[in-house]
Length: 218
Image 1 (cartoon, rainbow, N blue to C red):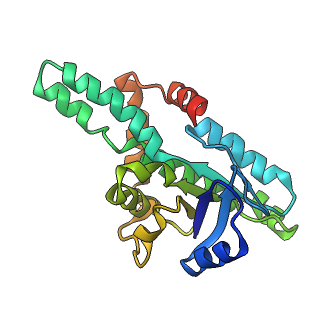
Image 2 (image 1 turned 90 degrees about the vertical axis):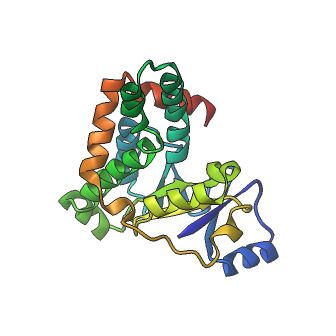
């Protein structure tokens, strides 16, 4: 499912034109009519809070849990690149290089697993009987626009999953026409993703601090 981020509500003709290009809905000023959209979620504790709020709402409205893996990688990559430039040996540089561009999607995989666990629970089965709609991940790719089509497509391929939707900017929409993601997407690689996130402490990278900083600018 593709959603489009717009600065204002589209006119009827514009909405129809975008819908013909495969757009399912529109995010305007952080909101989507008939759906709840969480603020961007940058760590697991924030994700758990948003997921619990979605499950507890009981209003039958679909909640989109908004993730920005690219921004997480951009932030952490800056730290890692600075360390690599200051490193005295190739081995130190190599040990840091493994983090580049990998944390954001790894975190998204862990979030997907937590979402799936919640949706497969007896608690949600009861909620569903009473009209609850399953929350869905919203992978925000609009932030990747300045970095070009290949970056956006890489994140789309790595984050593809039936329980995930993509948020694009109008500038990106033509880049995705006729393109289908290939590869395992978010569904595979949980063990590697957990290992990647768990080892951040060994590099003195605190995801809670990263989240606090990103929440101030997101």
